[in-house]
Every structure is written in C-alpha cells, then in structure tokens.
Length: 317
Figure 1 (cartoon, rainbow, N blue to C red):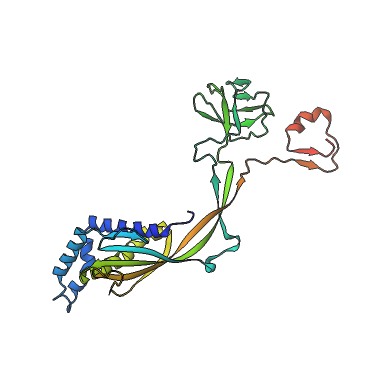
Figure 2 (cartoon, rainbow, N blue to C red):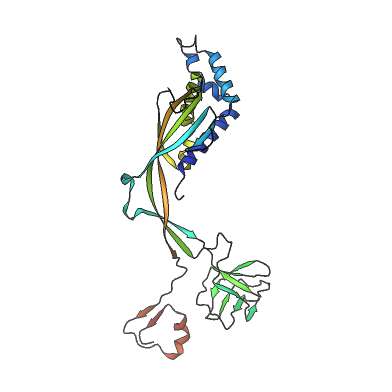
C-alpha cells in the first residue's frame, strides 16, 4: 500500500453497500422499521412508511459523486469531499521503520533476473551432473540453490554444489539441451526498503434529496446503517482504520435556488497507513569465510589437498 486515494475508497464502499442492500432487500426492513415498532410513532410511521422507503430505494438510482463535478447532478445523490489529512505524530516511530520486501526490477516487463546472460557450457556430464562453464565466465557468482535454466526446454535445475571456479553440479541423470542456458537466483536479488506513517483523514459527505423531506430522512437512515454495518468489511479491511462518523441536521440547501434540495451532512474520520520506498539494496545471496589460526606453522605439503577443502588454515599456510 502506498498513498491511498481514500475518497475513492469511500465512494466504492457506499456503492458496494447499496448493491448488497439491493441484492438482499430484506435488510431494508431492518433499516427503516425502527419507528414501525415504536408504540407512539407506529400510528403515523408504521409499516406503510417502511414499504414506501423500500420502494423508493429500490426504484431510484442514488449516484455517488466526488467533489467538483462539472455536469448537473441527479437526485437523490451523495457527494464526497476530503476536508483534511494530517500526519499523526502520535503514531510516528523513529526512522519511520517499515517493511523489507523482494524487489524485482523486471517485474513490469517480465524480464527474468539472470546471474549471467545466456551461455553454452563447454561440457556437461549427465552421469554425475557436472556442468563446465565456458572460458568467458567463472563460478564467482554461482551459489548452491540457484537454478540452471535450459532455454530450449524451459526447465530449471537446482545447483547442488560448486566444485571449482569453472564447474558446478546439478542432479545427475538430467538430460536436456543447455545451449544458450542461463542461471537465475532462487529469489529476487534485490530488497526494497519501505518506510511508513499514518494519516488522520476526514471527509464531508453530503446526502441530498429533491423536494421530498421524507427522502432526505430515509437517505440519512440508510447511510447511518451503511456506515455501521459495512465499515468493517468495506472500509477498515481496505485500509481506512478506526473510522468514526457523525450525522448533522437536514436543511434546505441554499446552493440550489431553482429547486428545493434537502441536504444532510455526514462526517467520517479514520486513520490511513501510507508507505513509500526509501531505497533499494542488493540482497545477500551468500557469504564465505575461513578461520586462520594465528601463529600456526605451515601445514606439511602432503596435507595440502585436505587443507584446501577445510574451513580453516594455519597463518603460515
């Protein structure tokens, strides 16, 4: 996750919630039936009102607009405007420590990372799996666990041992054409280091209905239900965390003088994680070392082969 376009996140959350309510219209009884179950209000706002509200929602498209549209909006509708976004010092950390991930420079172009470009071995013994490199390259960058890939067949063979500076082995008995073969690492050879911080973001959401005050009330009920029922799955799971909201009063909107529009403000706030790439660094593929015994006398010549294979040497060797 990099920098999240949270206004689009909220827009798609509302649209997905409405789609789910239309698909499961029995939920609308739960949205609108509060007054129908009330002992005092049910006379005037009983199940007839619930039926009217359900029919209004199911028969009307409620568009969700981001701010600054140049065309004429349709009603009923919902508008979304981001009002603030601040970095949270209360959730800051030293150096903005983040994540380390595999980085593949060729991922977009599908270019394979290669230890060496294509080469044809000077010899290959399938009986013991020994691959001898051509004179132009050595095994200085070859390690156990990398793969020899046959360009002809596309098959990859794990490198099991590095014998010397000119040869390595794969599993014995492998029969393939290694013309223009290449060697690839078992994982990406680069790490990307990311840092992170958190933003406290707020949005002003407008609920708008035309001419009929009841429609504005239904829209306010509907949106209250949506932000209670769907925010866990459609907001917090997608990166807009610890969200809270508040709903204001319904008033006649003064920006629409030719027609009567009722509007109700809904404010939603939450915390959003942001990440950025700090730097890209090569990944350690292998490390080699040897113990040298201080003041150790030279090893007798007859033991030279054994010392060459050992992980230690005398200082005077």
